[in-house]
Length: 277
Ligand SMILES: [Zn+2]
Image (cartoon, rainbow, N blue to C red; front, side):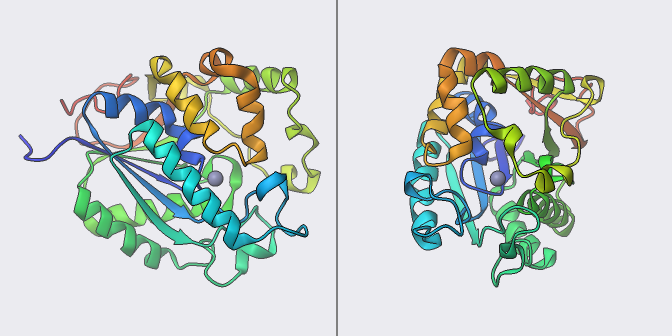
């Protein structure tokens, strides 16, 4: 057997993605004694500033936003009991089409090989048994999420390591439910700029294409508190408005597509570590 703790590594784009996408599995596996490593690729400087000020608006200071979000990220990691937080500190590229996409130092403009080389060092250091990131569309088309997928897959190839690899996803059946709850809690999501939403690919997958369903309802409270640590970000506020119980009901099962596996564990599976312990 291995001479190191079983290890989960999650590679995310921005501070707060760890909570929405994988807060449940981070909390659950930490509670099971598994070492959890979070890699956050960007500084989140294109997020909301204090008081909800949006990037480009007067009073939005990207450096101050990055500093605030770094603190929020640490608070979220404390709640989720993340063992190791690693930040790559690339500049947030903003939504697709923003000028920030091509700003110097943006994650989106960083050559994949460069980001992959840095991530490969972390892979060699932690030797994760399970790696989680986004799908090739970055789940909803955000450039930094797409880039996180690209550097992760390239880094794995560089190291030749063969952990179980997962892409986060959402079942279509749940997306419908999600839409209903969003309307109930008055999200302004649907009033988003049509030019932005038009270019978005359909998100989620048909239920039968999902390989891995992990029940994290027991950790719903931690996931909620982790998200609450990122309350400066407008899009998180609607989740927080739901309250813990409704939030856990909606977000309590985390779903993934397994894209690499050397264990032969049968799918569908209900544990990222199936076949490893
Ligand atoms: Zn993000």
